[in-house]
Length: 74
Picture 1 (cartoon, helix red, strand yellow):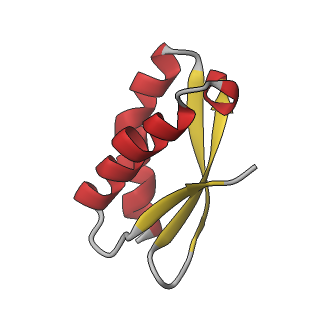
Picture 2 (picture 1 turned 180 degrees about the vertical axis):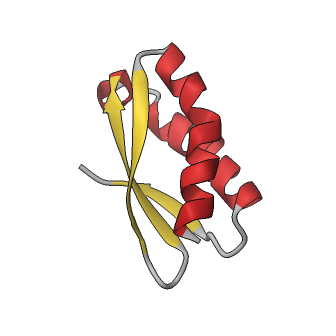
């Protein structure tokens, strides 16, 4: 599952980098919770929660069966 998540993150990474940000996979729990760290401009952007839900979470749920939620960690 982790490899599929990394592949899905690679697909959205160019959009984040275009705005000076990035995302890093931290952990995947057994119950389908993915923990990521938003980097660069994404870490301090006021729209980061929207990016997390509408961008990162939506892409991961679509591409990787079994993902229930994506959480940002520091």
